[in-house]
Image 1 (cartoon, one colour):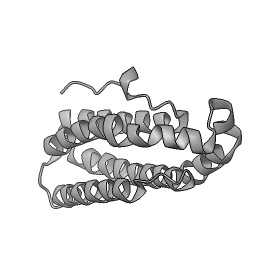
Image 2 (image 1 turned 180 degrees about the vertical axis):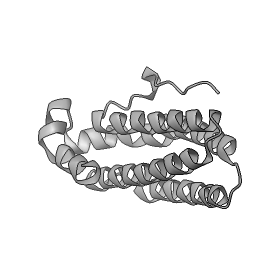
Image 3 (image 1 turned 180 degrees about the horizontal axis):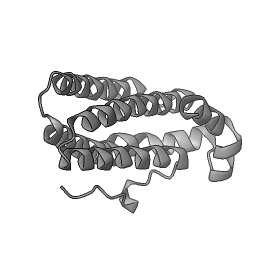
Image 4 (image 1 turned 45 degrees about the vertical axis):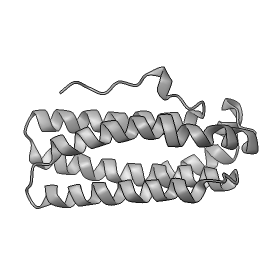
Amino acid sequence: MAQLRWTSDLDTGIEAIDKQHRRIIEYINILKTAHDKADLSAVNNVLAELVDYTISHFSFEEELQQKANYPFLKAHKRVHEIFTRQVADLQQRAKNGDDVTAEILSMLEVWLVNHIKGDDADYVECVKRSLGLDEEKEERGWLGKTLKKFLG
């Protein structure tokens, strides 16, 4: 399986979000490598880490949207909840011994790219405008503090 690559069309312009999205792609690629090696234990471990990281990312995104009074926060949250439930179901199947890695990878790749280009792109301008974000402020201000809170 080919590695998933970050391309500039995935940039949101919010550096903290872009860093998190890049990290999710790294996890997906690590998962691919474990799958290619047929290492079910590694697959399950990486999948657990990916799910935990993604849930933290969703929380971070939702907090950003809430602070920005994003009008479609509820709908965005619902998309996150549905995705989380789907991945949890696949994760449970994997824990039960089913090899669902190809299914998970296919779903993750399609979902991530579509979510970034669609759902995430919709909130970017609202967040930037409402919070007055620029790259320098991200590191010093509310965004930097929130990022540290969620991701250490």
